[in-house]
Length: 263
Image (cartoon, rainbow, N blue to C red; front, side):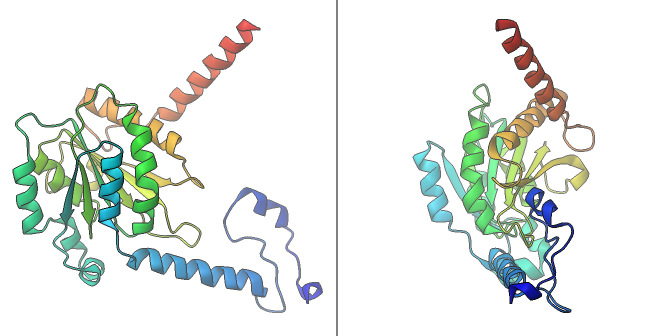
């Protein structure tokens, strides 16, 4: 049977990407193996969208790592409303609004992290804790507020959370729309002076955070750079450019030169 599969000339390129290229051909169709793999990936993507976030487990993990945490819910009462009514996922429920009002401090934090299910609870459950550990160890001189776990959440929900907690910066760690090769990809959205009504032009985004994409340390490096300059400049969004890669390259070059000088 394998002899009837026509190989693709781009076969060698598959070593460099997870994209579906050079799958071969059996007659006028795909070979059975890549077809089944596609169906599996499609099912995993659908599961990621509909799978509920286990907030209790996240709160346990946060407590184990020494983080205070709060639990909130958007105005979307369930997943069906969340998917059909994106506007409901951008505002808090009345109960959650009252909770955050009561939790607000007279000495507000500089940054609040929000872990949100978004369109992939898999991503929030799997990627958020390692990323949070990687970034907070770089923020020793920052006043960090309680970590907020948000269910049925869209990106803009972070604006209302940040406004109620009176924080300078809010960082949304949210499950991204699943792809056929990435059902567990996490997105990071950073907003300065968050408040209801902020536009996407007022925030910075770091995407595809997962071991197979942008790993935790690389994502933490980018986020730390953006946080530092957002605090210094008093803004995020189109006015804040991500030059962290150049900074990393400069540091790597300096390290190479220093190693060479010691030899």
